[in-house]
Length: 293
Ligand SMILES: NC(=O)c1ccc[n+]([C@@H]2O[C@H](COP(=O)([O-])OP(=O)(O)OC[C@H]3O[C@@H](n4cnc5c(N)ncnc54)[C@H](OP(=O)(O)O)[C@@H]3O)[C@@H](O)[C@H]2O)c1
Image 1 (tube, rainbow, N blue to C red):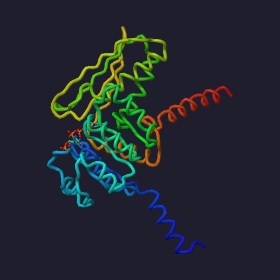
Image 2 (cartoon, rainbow, N blue to C red; image 1 turned 90 degrees about the vertical axis):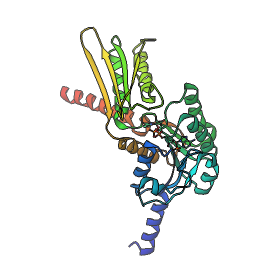
Image 3 (cartoon, helix red, strand yellow; image 1 turned 90 degrees about the horizontal axis):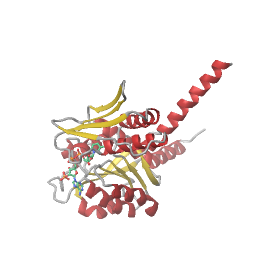
Image 4 (tube, rainbow, N blue to C red; image 1 turned 180 degrees about the vertical axis):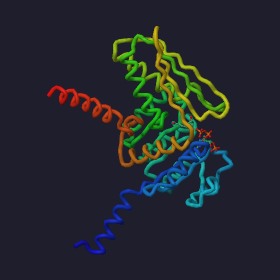
């Protein structure tokens, strides 16, 4: 029979194993949603919250900023990032700031062996290459997630498959976001471009133009459409975010995934879409076999 002491030790061990200490960089429109999301998790705890060097949020209590009494973490600035990390020792830091800050932060965090989820978008191709190499140099873990929602990742997968099958059709991407979104085209649109180009290449088509059309207007949270247009018919695949809560769910998934891992990953790894697709194809094969018996 298990003694009370053993039960206590097991529960303490569970606490120690599963409590992920999370740091947040970028406390803007999206960062605040991520913070709310983390505060609702039993296996996560916010230990650091970081704003820009000249932000009016400096020194504030995170709970005050969110109107959420569950946290009393004091907000520090990114120019004291190293000292904050040294003091608070997060397992994973989630960055929703801006590309210049995020690349600088990723290097500092990686040198300190902290894992990072980067939701920030607007990186140059060179910066993305740099991000891919950082975890191999410093042996930490990075999830680069310009497309953090499950829905958008399914859109990517479907577009890739469609490009492989409909390689003689024309592909166009249309993305719409709120008026003041800084980067254009969006990071997700650029990733969609890569997925379509990859799908076309698999089927032997190279250098086909894939125009991206960006609309910046009003308060649109985010919409991405892939138009696949042939001579006689058209397919349109769209994803639209209604609420920034979807970003928070994606970020929480990524935090759980990268905890204690090393290497470079993207959301398709976090969501395990390849495995799901493989199982789906296997199930089709099995159906075909059983119908022949
Ligand atoms: N991956 C996705 O699916 C996804 C979804 C939504 C947004 N995003 C991306 O996430 C980023 C943020 O988006 P948002 O809508 O939240 O923008 P936002 O409201 O402008 O928030 C950005 C925040 O970062 C802070 N910041 C700026 N420089 C900083 C630094 N050096 N260190 C720490 N914080 C700094 C800003 O200033 P203060 O600290 O002065 O307040 C601001 O609060 C953008 O790149 C956006 O495209 C990605």
